[in-house]
Length: 169
Image: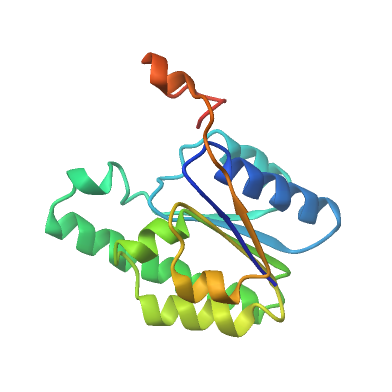
């Protein structure tokens, strides 16, 4: 099945982390792959401690609007490697695949869209696939079995409070 956690609110990755922990707790082979993130978020160590395969690229050290064309090309290359690794894991019997911030990488063209879409759409009947990030593409929303939209009502950022380690990252 295909699940999507989207919207402008805080909690898309947090929901995906919860799904990963739940699946691992049930004995399911689970992978958590991050796009547009460098693996420095606080949840990474706990996911690994729970036997969850975690993959990311350290090429994403800054926001995409701060990257030059060469940096974007390197991020795209790394993202394509992550998709190929996901395909390998799926072929080895992975039960749950979480693609964190996939929607943004896809929308920004920082991934081979055809390869990624083919993998997701062809494997959603054999594994649980979860996509996170704002503005999912129509190809995925049309195919999704679940879509959860997280909407902000109030956030400390509105008061000038920066992201806090252990809470927002």
